[in-house]
Image 1 (cartoon, rainbow, N blue to C red):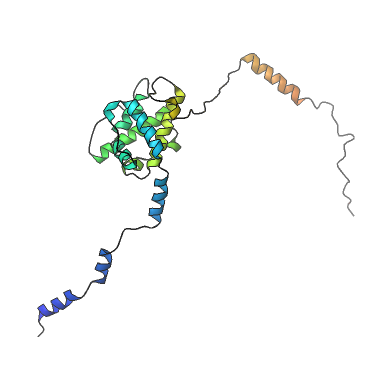
Image 2 (tube, rainbow, N blue to C red):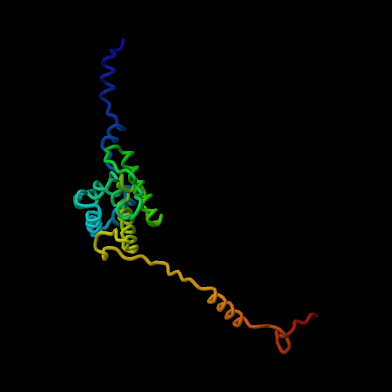
Length: 218
């Protein structure tokens, strides 16, 4: 008869190679980490200071100021409240975000970020300049957040509707469409000019025109 307790002790004394390997496994530094590092490198600390100053002036002192650095910037804007106040402050009439509510619930914060993005698009920001909700809420791409806010600031400076609060030199003015309108007389005159430029082929012939040596068929 074998002693079961001895067998159990012998089994427990055998080192588990797989378990040890998993316990000593460090963090992954593969391709995904390289991609994230490249994204993070696009974040601009100087632009951060400009955006913080603009948002503080645009929304008022109640919004406070974040801790310096991208993580502080992200925590400052993460719940979407400040962003919604920002986009609302730029509209002269009806505000795009009807209700702004402080909440610790993730879905509510992401919903308010989404409302900001819709308001920014309604204001005129191109979809190509928009960040995704996870770019801010999960700190996936804070440089994209900076890009959206910069585009919003540039539009506010360009529109010059009296709602922008800040230094106009913080953002560049976007090129505006130079739409020209013509009267009926100008349009008719233009058609006559085009007709004269086209000329007439009445009475024209191919006489005297040479097309090279004709091909001989043997």
